Length: 325
Figure 1 (cartoon, helix red, strand yellow):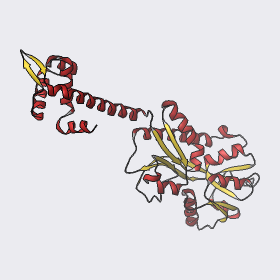
Figure 2 (spheres, rainbow, N blue to C red; figure 1 turned 120 degrees about the vertical axis):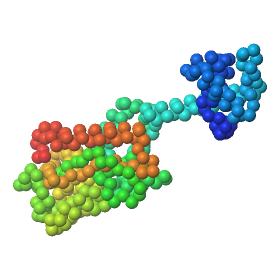
Figure 3 (tube, rainbow, N blue to C red; figure 1 turned 90 degrees about the vertical axis):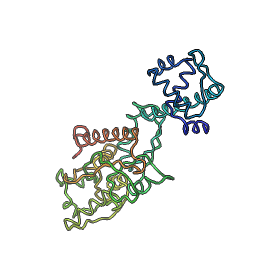
C-alpha cells in the first residue's frame, strides 16, 4: 500500500488505467477500445506518463509496442493500484446502500420504548445487513455526550435540543402532544382536556427541569403565575406514569408514553393536556461528522414511525374505546 501511494504522487489514476490497458491489450488501439477512449487520447496519456516517469515504458518496433523491463516491473504495482481503487469503490457502494454499516443510536427512554424498536425493524427490512448499537439516556446526557469520541453516537433522538453544550447539529422531525395520567377515578369530574390551571388542586408528579417537558411546564406555570403542588419529582416518563397509577399524583407526559402505559395498565385514567402545548422531537448528531446518507435514511424511518404512532395514539378508536383521550 505504501508503494501504491508513492505511485499516486507521480502519476494520475487515469495514466495507471491507460498503462494497464495497453499492457493487457498489447496495442494502443486495443487499449482505446477497452477504455472507450480515442487512440490519440491514449497515445497522449502514455507519452505524458513516460515523460513524468523519466523513462520509456514501451519500445516502438515496426509499429508495435514492446514492453520494456521497467513496464513489466511496474505492471504488478499497477494491478495493486487498480485493486486498491476497486476496494475504495466497493466500500463507497456499501456506504451508499448501508451494507454492513453500523449505526450507533441513542434515544430518551420514552422514544426508545415507543418509537425506536419499530423504526429499527423497518430499516432492517430494507437493509438487513445493517448493524445497530442502541442505548437510552436522558436528554441532558445525550446532548452532553453526542460529540464525545469516547462515548459518541451517530444520531440521538430527544424531545428538543435546547440546552446543548457540545457542538451538535439538530433536525426537528415531528412533535407529540401531551396527556395527563392518574389513578382510575381521580379524573372522573374533569373535562376531556385539562389545562395547567386545573392542576392547582391536585398533587403533581413533576419532571426535573433538566428534561424538556419539565422545563416546558415550569415555564408555563411561571407565565400563568401558578404554583404546582409537586410532591414527587422524577426524570423518567415511565416512572411518572407508574407512580400516578399507584395514586402518587397526576403525571403529565407525552401522549405516546401515556397511552402505551394505559394499554398495559387498565387502572389508570387519561386526559388530553393543553392542546396548545407539544413536545418537539429532534434528531441530533455530532456537528463535525454531519449526517451520512445511511444515518439520514434511518432518521427518515424514525420520523415516519413517529408520525404514525402519534396519529394512532390520538385516534380513540385505535386505542381503547373506554379510554378518555
